[in-house]
Image (cartoon, rainbow, N blue to C red; front, side):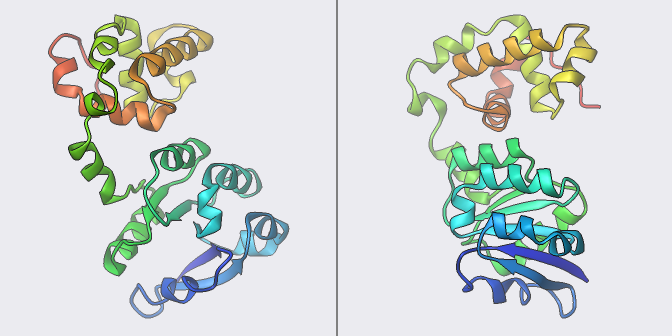
Length: 222
């Protein structure tokens, strides 16, 4: 049985978590109105297999996930937001969350997503794909194409490793450059790409992969 710790100022969503899975698969063993309350209960944190943030707690997911990871670094955290927010999604994953989903998700999809997280996979909302299809970066910012062409070869290379999930230290070791140099290239690339964090940067690279790979060499995952 997978033991869930649920954080939400409202009790309305809590009963659903125990019913989305086959009998005996999930159990909400601890529930709290806020992150601070959950952190104060060391036994509750220690006894759970996964932490779920929803409701008002999900609105400040970045700060909440950061605090929870400091208190329980090995516990996977999933954010259940009322609606998709790219800023919220990026902040959540930057802070260490394993999942960011929207409450409108079907029960079956939610169950499967939580099981993937237990297996060590990261999960994203289906609405994210729709957003990328419906609203390209050119729609968001007409000057983006010019800035994309302005990416230096090293910025592009570093961002390819960001897309693959490498940390700054891993990128520095792979490319044989200093960690501070990696940070500089990433910050410059973020500015040119008009993104705010690694998640948005990785998504940007994925969306433009075909165009970018036609003129530069891409590193292999591994």
